[in-house]
Length: 366
Image (cartoon, rainbow, N blue to C red):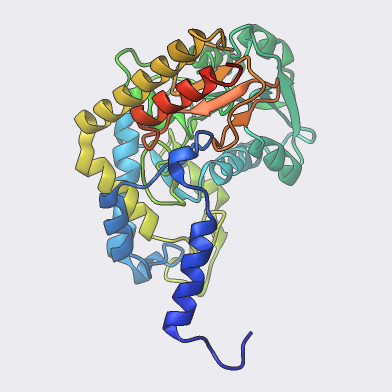
């Protein structure tokens, strides 16, 4: 730490320099986050100093969190869902498994069944909670094989996990089949819809994945992804309104005397941002945004296939993968564990960017 601080001009000159070192979003094709909507940014700034970890000091902000949970619960066919705002999918997934672990604490060696496509946060969760993680192979379309999942169930199984919008291939697991397995075996079912939760409900033909299915107990969704909110904005929703109270611990010196959250201090600003964009765009606005992203996904697939670059999968949401091993240097893409080129068609990936990328891919071997 400096003995004498920088001047404001020196400080922000330094910050501006560092910001210029960040990558330009117009070349970022690999991220599941996007530029936040200006309305979300404006709302975020109003609530910068708020802390939901001590909600009695910020009752207005705490009421926004309840509204956010209600908005998302309604979107997922359960207006009275329980839940709270998390820092994102990782926290939501850890908390869901923590909840199941506590509710089935009579088992000495519990296990959870997850697809091989599960986000790496489930490995973290199982390590922390001392759970055996049982990965299930995917079918030829990169979805969880529900029959193989059923075969993994035994007396120590506490939960199934399904993904609605997989990170690598943009697929929706057979959640309806998983729901039936969960009900038949009295298991919890967690749906990781961190990405797809703000996509699937706005598709012309939504895939079944939410509380409309009787076996679904918890859902993770990230408004800071396709919800276009500020980072970090996640949410964990529960079928039973008071389900999370099983995780309560005493917090004697706060304005609330018990809390079930994982983080102590929790920012209220991204919660306001997430609610703002939901209420600003509404269903019609989100449908238009998602339709544009899906149209761009189809255009990218068609464009690259004209150059002989084949798709690796036909995605359910706006993630495109290809059998390809190189791209022009300036574009920031990613690669799946199977070695496929992966591109996420977020709202900041505009049509002109797609056309430029297609053209440059076609010129690679010209």
